[in-house]
Each structure stands twice: as C-alpha cells, then as structure tokens.
Length: 170
Ligand code: RB5
Image 1 (spheres, rainbow, N blue to C red):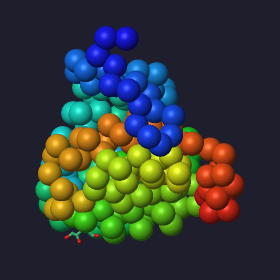
Image 2: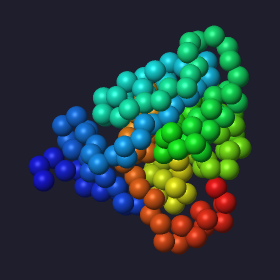
Image 3: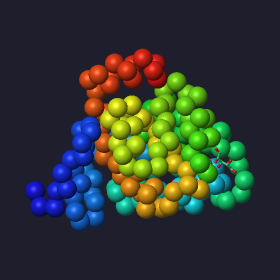
Image 4: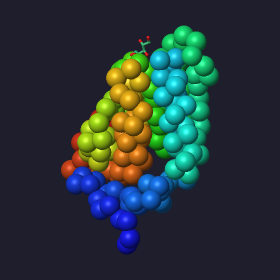
C-alpha cells in the first residue's frame, strides 16, 4: 500500500499513512481527556490533534489556566472510563504523576505516565494501559502528539501479558 510505514515491533498496531498520519479503524467511543491548570494548554493542543485524527473527544476540564486540583480531573476521567463513556483517556498535569495516581485509584483504570513513544507502545502492548498520562512541564507538544498517536494506534498484545494484566485486577 503506498505510503504504508510498517508496524512497530510490539503489539498489533494499526496502520499509519504517510500523508497526514491518518489512523483508521479506531474504536467508536470518544477519547476522554482531562487536565489541571498546568496541563491546560497541552490538553487544548491534544484535543485539536484528536479531532484532526477524526476522533470524538469528551473533555472533562479543567476549563482555563486558573489553579485547580489535579485529583479532581484524574478521578473524572477514570470514572468516565469505568462507566463505559470512553475506552481510553488522556490526562495531563505538570508532571503527569499526580493526575495518573488519581486516575489509578479507580479499579478499572491502568494509567501510564509516558514521555516517549517506546514507553507508550509498551504500555499499550504489555500493560493494556487505558489512560495515557503526560507531563506538560516536562515534554513539548511534538513529543506529546507522538505519544498520543502511538497510544491510539497500538493494541494490547494479549498472550502472556493478558495473564499478568489480569493479576493487576483492574
Ligand atoms: C501543579 O502545580 C502540579 O503540582 C501538578 O500539575 C502536577 O505536576 C502534580 O503531580
């Protein structure tokens, strides 16, 4: 197929195309996203990116740069996934750490803090991470967009990893 980039090493990965990086065959449900004030600008950028990729977005805030508390938004994103409103989510705070801890308090969530595409690919393929956590004060927009694309494009590898993920109980 013209422009086909091939598949990364881990996991069953959906196809990338050279022109516009269009991703096909994505799940129907929206991607839920949330951030605190530190992640607000990056969240807005990621929402634009998701829409450019043809994905519906469920934005649970925050709604501006005023100071808020990251646990509220990590919890809201996690609950949207637990309630079946979305299959995958993205959370952003200054480091990605606080909001991932908040999301991981929910027993249906496997949130992974990742700042490079390899970590994201392995978090999807090996851990079946359903939430990507990013640190807006640690990475730039292009790295974040790359992480987002890999997060959407990589499927869980299953097999021995399914046994391990089942032991996580979430
Ligand atoms: C907010 O200042 C900052 O603490 C928060 O965004 C996050 O980095 C916490 O983990």
